[in-house]
Amino acid sequence: MLCQTEKFSVIDVPAMLKIIPLSQGNKLYHEILAEADVNGDNTFNASIRDRENLIFDKAVTQQSLIYGEVTTIESFESILETIRPLINKKERGIMIDLGSGSGRACLSTAILASDIFHQAIGVELLPSLYGLSLSLQRTWNTKNINDCKLSFYKGSLLDLACCDWTKASFVFCNSTAFDTITFNSMAKLTTMMAKGSIFVSLTTELPITTGFKMVEELRLDFSWGQADVFIHIKDDNDDDGDDEIKKNDIKIQIQII
Image 1 (cartoon, rainbow, N blue to C red):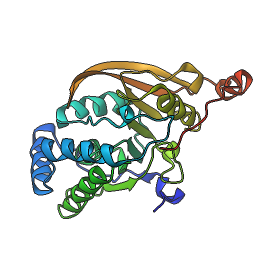
Image 2: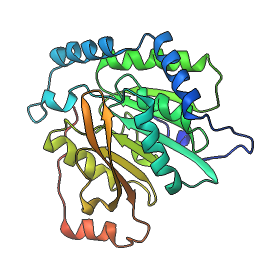
Image 3: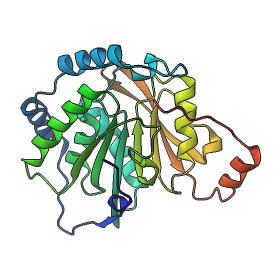
Image 4: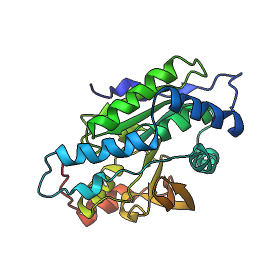
């Protein structure tokens, strides 16, 4: 199944849309995880099993698929609150998590930020983790908490035929374990994102040649410990960004994993 282009349209913000406070959101977050049977043990074990069974391209190592994910809604709330002033408040957009694991970042977004996003999408290559995210999606759909839609796609984050995440208004990527080829290939794709888009990476900043500038750095807790969080925005004032990239003739071969 493809991420159809029409799914990336913006939707006006409902006048009476309520923002869920963190305390209530935290309770909902854990209730949904428990009901969907998504926990630290089954996500970690699923990732190990899948990485052992996958056949890798010579240019891509298992390192890029080491499991790591948001474990608390509080950490992702810090990211959402940091990007909130940067988001167009008159219309809602799309949030996409690249390498979404069991879907916790998408769930956090759907609970806490339905006022700025009408859809949260995850892209995950490992089959078992993708299966857990579908369980999370089914559980979310029974709750009628708000109108933010959860969707998940199985495939490589480098394969835009699976999901063209470059049309999203906010992309989150846990890039901590990415090898150089995978990170650079992903970074090349970010040049296709619209100006004003938000891209959040972990551990490694996007190159300035992508047209993104880093506007905030956080240090937050994740499943493996603390990590540096780099919040970037596609620079509205960088009118020559695309021309500069072409002039430098950056050539990065994209490896589909």
